[in-house]
Image (cartoon, rainbow, N blue to C red; front, side, top):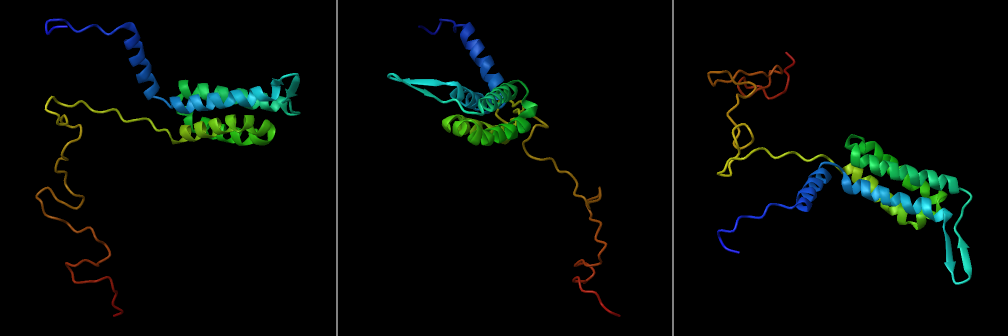
Length: 186
């Protein structure tokens, strides 16, 4: 590769990866993933039959339907966190509550695995806040006019346009009139 070699155009994979990265950064992606992954063990274990040699362990509980409902709701909440970021607080609180309900209903919350994923994802959803977009900056690295930088000299609340101050103290206790806040009785 020499200095005259033109830079390679970014491939389709790189373009899609950057688009996904921008999409992921604008929403509580990881919170949604944790909540989504927390729903699977909660709804799977009550219906699972584990084989240990010739021994079959049935994990079915009497509340299998409740486990299925909790798991499906957690999956739906996880997907809604990806595509509807404005419901993040509701979805986070609902995920935390469903994770807590899954402890007694669904084999200790999917053997604690689904409980922890849902609890952490719900907490991440509640704590997530959209980032502030950075303002345009000039080539010198200084902030563009009106986009930060040094604050302009704005007049103070009690300052007149000629620079003198007008007292706005209605209590009568200012150093200018010698009062110290004590009232005289007579």
